[in-house]
Length: 207
Image (cartoon, rainbow, N blue to C red; front, side):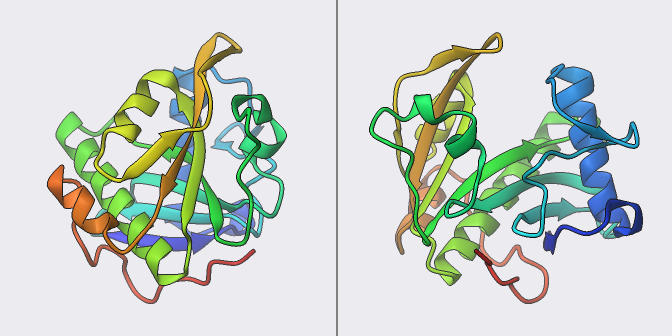
């Protein structure tokens, strides 16, 4: 299932949040060799991992083992697309109280391909449910151009925000996903969406 968590002091954080940051280091730093900060030589955390970030975490039954996660950031505050990749949006970076950025999709390599796909679909489903519950109408992000093609073909209303460009050895592109009442049905067509994946009350969106 999916847990919604806010950031905490990492040294005092619950095991699920710590497990997520450890897996982010394993993927983004150890595997992909991104030049980004590490805390205590153990956790991948950047300047956007603050009190405004909302984490969606897929967890095993013991609620302490991270199976996948993503991060939502309010666009009215500094975020990746706005501060580091505005050149990917020739028409301007979308911003507003109902616009949020999706970042740090993390699916641990220790899991098999089938489990990673299942966790990804749970996260997408929970993200859409959360967006509909809190009036979020647009989700933005920046990813590798090859992954952007997958995102644009998932069934929801999505569009590129500009051409892909080389940055730090990667071919990156920005995207926007329009969230509407029919989004769950559109994702059902591609066997992605399943409802009621969020555990407990939905956390406040924050701004």
